[in-house]
Image (cartoon, rainbow, N blue to C red; front, side, top):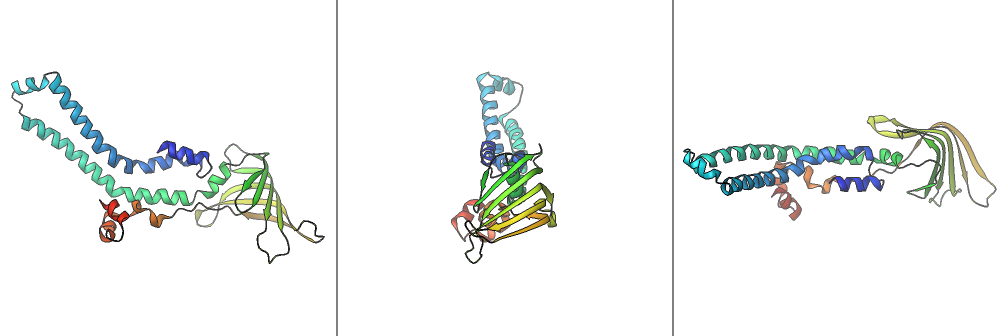
Length: 241
């Protein structure tokens, strides 16, 4: 899981600062598989070593029966069962938090991959250039953004934005936004004599948000919801099982 998240962070799909948080949110789902397997292996190794080193004969000579050993093993197994049952119960809540985190990571992922003094191609036919950026990747200086217009109803084909500063801030509903300050905007077409020019004090740079379809992620559904909808398709039935 860690390698998978690091791969997505290296390709710019998620911010690197979210890797450990996403891995932590993945832990309950992983432990529901690893804990029973680990307990099974522990019992096999422990009893195998007791038999191979003749410790089991000493237990029997001291009056400890197989029933007592089985009872101790079942008590530990009951503890593991209760822990796994609790993790199965909370796994949908962790999955929902992970999905929300991925859905709101677009701005952070975008600003994490910015490299100063390099022209970078962005989605929707955009090219971005910045002079410098701070170590925390929250503020940048000297912004140049060229956007190609795909709307044929408009007279201009290119929009160029130049701003002195770009900063990541919290917007409405605690959502991250990239705010540009003290800039100019140009709208023009190659070969045309007319052009539009304007200035702005504050502007918001729109960044495409990652598309995470939570309606297809069955891990966010509770056991009760899975029980009610298990017959709708095979994916729901497999998740319930």
